[in-house]
Length: 203
Image (tube, rainbow, N blue to C red; front, side, top):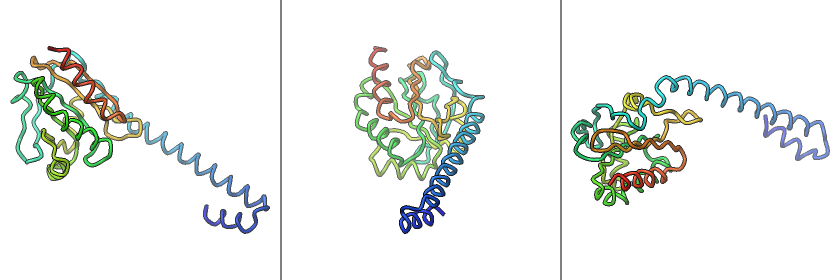
């Protein structure tokens, strides 16, 4: 419909009737789009408010177990109390922000290791997806498959304003206590910076 109106405007550039039709169509489509986003966001918020901020600074990190990118069961209790933990939830494998975040954690792996910190990335994709993601970018840390988003819900990780899975990083000390909760959907690299800052200040 839009293409037809534009075509008529090109043929009859001085015809105000077609110009008004075009403007009316664009306005109508814009209103529909805004209403769609509003309803979509209300739905997303209604699904996340119940568990939002379950895990806060000062909380004990909850127990959970998930499969890593190699299909091995990873129990958080195997690392809790022995190392500092950097647990970061990200939206999806292979998206630009998540790839940048993962590669920055990879490049800073040795720096985190010096702070006795174990890096753990969690998202809802399958084990196979995580393995492909890890192999493609040579990721040198654990990725956990949270299909069903049960651990995401356990932590109370909120969705973003657009309804996407949220991007939140938790730093946990050797007592199992959360010392940082950093939430930023779009500033992916800031998660690494904030986590490292907290770790360095702990020592």
